[in-house]
Image 1 (tube, rainbow, N blue to C red):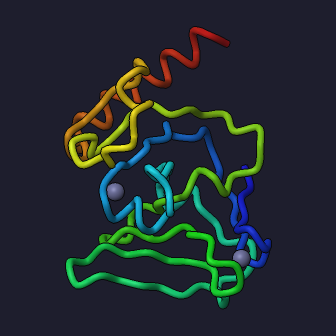
Image 2: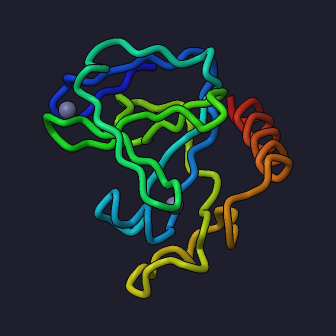
Length: 151
Ligand SMILES: [Zn+2]
Ligand SMILES: [Zn+2]
């Protein structure tokens, strides 16, 4: 699975089967995406490889430690490495279609924008905050058994 920023300077490759996608509705993700939420997946570091353009990436961090890496040419958010350096956060909108994964969770739903109305009408799992590692792995297990059933 390949992905790239809007201008194509920054690109990367994901290996293995894709984890589920989540949408974060927190105020930070709204600002960094310019939208009601961002859509992303978290992948193990060994399954992530930069293909091009690492020199075009600039990193911004808020005082509270929220990090955003972006392409300096086009402004797209790009993947960034977790603080413990074991996983990459990958913006789902950068992935080239078709993507063999789907949205499985809405997170930080309690802080969603008051104009964000579509959220309550779908049947996707919702979390007030970021799910714990345990909740997340349960979700991933459901996701993979669901995918295998529908194959
Ligand atoms: Zn770019
Ligand atoms: Zn967020």
